[in-house]
Length: 336
Image (cartoon, rainbow, N blue to C red):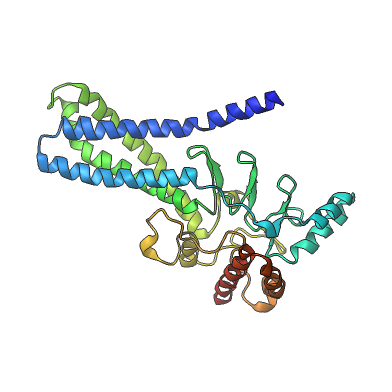
């Protein structure tokens, strides 16, 4: 028991190392740019002020998005998807796998679940004891089921999913902007130090190294950001890009693709003015998503179970909000 706790403690400590590395690099870049470049190297006052103002805007947005990516807790399935005490007893007492699957099928009829496991069975997490909503996966690092899980990112020491996917995308975008701005403003002084126009000093090392680091991070971020932009346009997560979600009729990589505009709105919301601000503006609550294949009420089992949701929502506000979001989801499906 003590050994297990010690290993968990070590794992927790080591998981923060990538974040500390990024933090150290960013703090060094702040010192190198603000002090070594702007205060000690640039002599023109107007240029110095402009460089510092724009730099601090980029720096604040980068730090804000990075903070939100790290410290936004992963969204987990609500109580609606947990087995009730009676269902749990019935499920655990049943020894036949087929009978257990049938119990899960009966429970899932009351929930907006459209995806299946590779075997065609209802997706159930034995560790969390919940029926997995569509696009939900269990993270072995966070030790919980995460709504619309994309991946576990060591650089933010957090699961990237429904609750913070927008923040992660903005973090990549503002990181690129931060690197581009540094590289473009440092370039002329990089050349002056390189050809010996400026005298050697402590600033030379910082400015030369700052240029190389900014370009190196920009290239790596450019490919990662471009890949995630493609995922958003297709309405896929990283996990779904490698393994297509399985529906009743079989696997379909484009099962959640409802068009580029609506795909963007699911992540960033309807108000375009808020798209670049790291506050949550996405649609829904992460428990269900519009399906491209559902274009009529007769083929929508979610509409067929609407009365069940409304009857059971009288017990709590959380369930009531699910019904409200569910209606919005159906409207999008009917428009498709």
